[in-house]
Each structure stands twice: as structure tokens, then as C-alpha cells.
Length: 253
Image 1: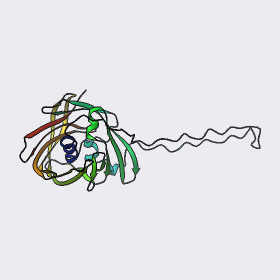
Image 2: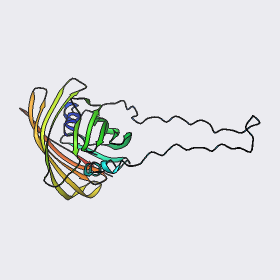
Image 3: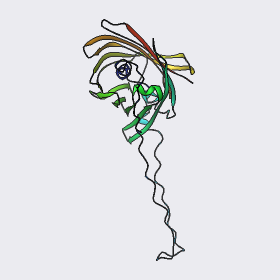
Image 4: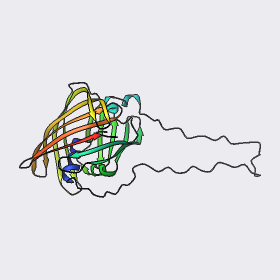
């Protein structure tokens, strides 16, 4: 899975990479137990007559073909198994955890997924993302309030494609983070990670950031493996008057 450029930086820099306890409410809906099967007794229903049990229709395991575009495959929404990642920040302890995406809502033209993170990765929050015909959007996050839904990946990802993204997040502490960056698809390349090698699609992001009244610059590289998700990310942020901060996320065993 990818993490929004804005939200990732907000989770790292605003939270200060401090290890904190987060309440983890389940995002999956609870199932109601079905009614007990009908029993035949000595009532008015003759014992020779049995009622045919009807099974509820099974939910589809994958979205309609119109939603299975490049973004769906590279973002890794087809991968519903827990995925191990590690986060590294220069000068801080490495943190690890699992990330999982589960379908929360299904409609013909829009599927919503709950993306949850455990252990150390819980510091990066949990999200809800919407799979639509034109791409994948982050619609909410536990890190704070989004100004609007944010495009994670457009539907089509040919080499050379680029797009601008402007984002604004009001963090739970009241701090405001804003970014504006241009994203560009570089192409598929082999990448080494702690989980092994992957053939992954490289997307770069270069732009500006603003944390409350502090302006700065941001530069990132994201590698997405088809039907797995983001397997590596390298990023650097420099705020005015401050030092350049380097951090990364990587798939691990």
C-alpha cells in the first residue's frame, strides 16, 4: 500500500516520531449471527415437507473490471494479506509493523477499503481509501481532517505520465500541513528490499511543504510492486531554517 505524501510526512514530522499509544478501534463491520435453522415438529407442518434453506449471496472477492486499472494493481488492493513494513528515520530507532487493506464498502462504481497498521506503524494512522474508475483516493485518516479527498494514484500509469497534487491536513493537535507536488511515473525497475527483490513501478514526487508557518521542500521516490503495493519509499524534507530530514519505508520479512 501507498501512504499519501502529505499524510506520511504529517505522521512523521508532526508526531515527531515519538512512540505513542493509539487506541485501535476495529474498522471492520461485525457480522450478525444468522437465525437458527427451522425445525420440523409436530405442529401444523407435515413432517414429510422440508423447507429449502437459502444461502445469502456471496460477496465478490474483487471489484468490477472497470475498477481493475493500473492504480488498483500497483496500489496493492488485490493483496488483502497483512504486509510487513519497516520505517527508518535518521537518528531514530527503526519501527516495524503490518499493514492490511480490507474491503469495507462495495458499490458498482466505488469500492472503499480500510487500511490499518499495527505495532510501530500505528504512528502513521489508519486510512480509508476509495477505488474509483479514475483512480484511488484517500477519503479519511485518523491523523486528522483532510481538506478534501486526496488522489493517491490515477487510474492509468504509463511511463512519463505526471500530475499535480495539492493537499491540506489539519492534524488532531490543530497543526496544519500543506503540500503541493508534481508526481511523475518513471517506469518499472528492479528494486532491492529487506523482503527481497521486486520488479516495481517508480514514481517520484517533488514539491513544497508548509507546516503551520514554516515553508520547506519535499522530494520522494515510491516503488510499487504489482498486486503487492508500495515496497519501498525514500523521502527527504527540509523546512526553512532547519536540517534536511531523510526517512524511508521498506518491505521486510
